[in-house]
Length: 124
Ligand SMILES: *[C@@H]1O[C@H](CO)[C@@H](O)[C@H](O)[C@H]1NC(C)=O
Ligand SMILES: *[C@@H]1O[C@H](CO)[C@@H](O)[C@H](O)[C@H]1NC(C)=O
Image (cartoon, rainbow, N blue to C red; front, side):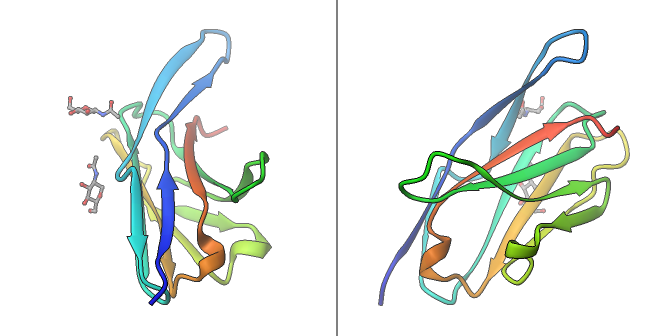
């Protein structure tokens, strides 16, 4: 059986609307190895309670560009067409608690091997 490797990096997201804030966004795993057709769910959390959008990006091996997979806005997920089949984004960014969102793939394929990033920002 082949093994698929995901590398998940901790991503520090800076947003500067007037005042510049450094926000640490924590991802749940540094990497995960799974079998083809397996399921994987990765989490991303932060404590900036008024940042109600979490975005997920994918950087494929050998590429420099980060591609937007989709994002969670409060409880609503929006996923780019190219990723709709494979990815699910969920969580609830309402309320005043620390935030926690997930990216899930059911039926992992080899082409899902990539570095995944998450980022957070305020809802506009
Ligand atoms: C959020 O706060 C909790 C409790 O203070 C802390 O354990 C956790 O590391 C914080 N998370 C981040 C991403 O800073
Ligand atoms: C985020 O939610 C998942 C699933 O409920 C949980 O396992 C994980 O510990 C949560 N992460 C944080 C930082 O609360």
